[in-house]
Length: 245
Image 1 (tube, helix red, strand yellow):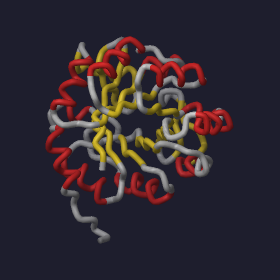
Image 2 (image 1 turned 120 degrees about the vertical axis):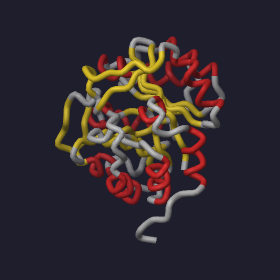
Image 3 (image 1 turned 30 degrees about the vertical axis):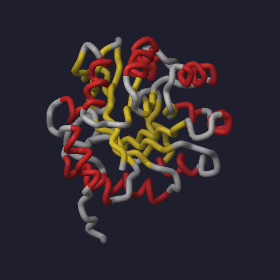
């Protein structure tokens, strides 16, 4: 299972939100590039970037710092937040990003997203953010009536790179991930599912690995010292036994 340490960008700084609430922000670092280098030095091979300003504005907003991060590290880098047109996709891939996470546009413009997946095969990730099993959009500011698994079903036949599945109720709360929901999604689809939200301890990482998830995004718990990256990478190599095994 892949470990994706997360850098959430707002105003060029590395921040974290609780449950996607822009009023509950903590600034963890003034220099996101230095944070990315630290993650690489600790052994990470993957990096998950979120443009929070972009998610709110509907277009990429932290391009300069994203460019600097991608140039500074040799990790597989992905970015989500505000990517809603082809020009943005092309611009971001030209920065050297390996893949892009699209969520709101996949829900609101499904045909367009399918076309983009065909034009950029295995470079686009379907970002599904769910609250109580229902898809949330626009930087989590709105909740739709679409079940998360139903949204995934719409894109079974397109060349997705992966699905990033975020459980908003646990995101940034340091209370553990919704392993059952994550496992259900991974069993429901054939593409890799990366779990996001609430990953706090090495035990959480091990449980997700044992449940068959392809990856896990770790954010706030890294910054607050609840888990360290080498320990998470070790936990992936030695996942806990599944209770159903």
